[in-house]
Image 1 (cartoon, rainbow, N blue to C red):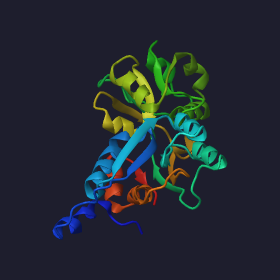
Image 2 (cartoon, rainbow, N blue to C red; image 1 turned 90 degrees about the vertical axis):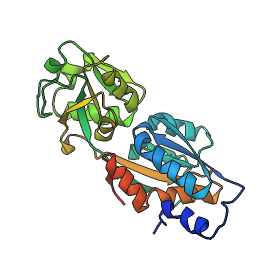
Image 3 (spheres, rainbow, N blue to C red; image 1 turned 135 degrees about the horizontal axis):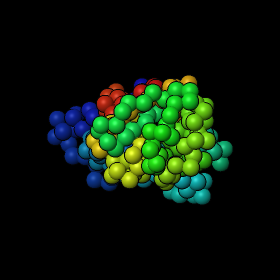
Image 4 (cartoon, one colour; image 1 turned 120 degrees about the horizontal axis):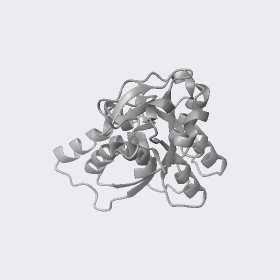
Amino acid sequence: MPRPFLAVAGPLLAAGLALPAAADEVVVFAAASLKTALDPIAQSFQQATGDRVTISYAGSNALAQQILQGAPADIFISASTEWMDEVEKGGDLVEGTRADLLGNRLVLVAHDAAAPQLTPAQGFDLAGALNGGKLAMALVDAVPAGQYGKEALTKLGVWDQVEPHVAQADNVRAALALVATGEAPLGIVYATDAAAEPGVHVVGTFPEDSHAPITYPAALLKNAADEADRAFLDALGAPEAGTLFRQQGFTVLN
């Protein structure tokens, strides 16, 4: 059972002891959709332990490719089991550390607060709702959010109609920004992204059976050398971290 990381500093301070002078650094590669939840978790861990957490956010595809090319990361948190599979096949995971951490939902968001609600269902008129505008999505053949979105639209029978109107972005937060700034009237993102951005409004939620389960696996990478690396991975499964993840709309799986 991982120890609650927010409680680590308490006994040290109560005993009048200083945190260790030699701090370790934990380098995390994390899916862009995790930023709002993961930043405060990392900050709390740093305050409790004195160790530094550096997080690089991007699409899971880009992060996986960097890891496979030798990027010096300690922990990988993917928004897709497939990209974690690729890293595992490359021999870059520490055996026994991979675990499914979180789940998410896929939603349709609008820039206009007065936009009508849509019910993503078989044959729904998404192309008509765009009214000539763009549908913002993460890269549909590489980034998990885009892949889930394309899968859902294909299963619902509307992909061929909307494909010409899709504006693809490097990651899901970039797609979210296109809608938040009004450059695209509609976009497909995770429910947690929509919750983190006041400039968008959820107008529909995709059926869970319209796409593969949205699962975030996490694992220690072979470059991890410090005890702090494993401690931070453990902290992600602690109750305090679970509370923060749930507050951002994630489903906690462990």
